[in-house]
Image (cartoon, rainbow, N blue to C red; front, side, top):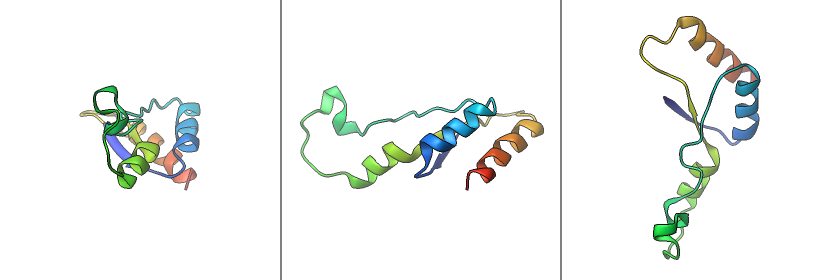
Length: 79
């Protein structure tokens, strides 16, 4: 698992998915939006931006070099 941050998360995720690359959004909302903390006071602009922009990419031991290249090629094409 390797996490990146992009303001174009939806477009990047679609492009990676079209190439057969599975991605995930592990934290789609900030902690104060979770039921246990709902109503917490404060302002978390950096956390809110990260919740909109963070995307998890595949990365694991023994990941084939061809797979690594495929992920990087799709990411480079989405710049």
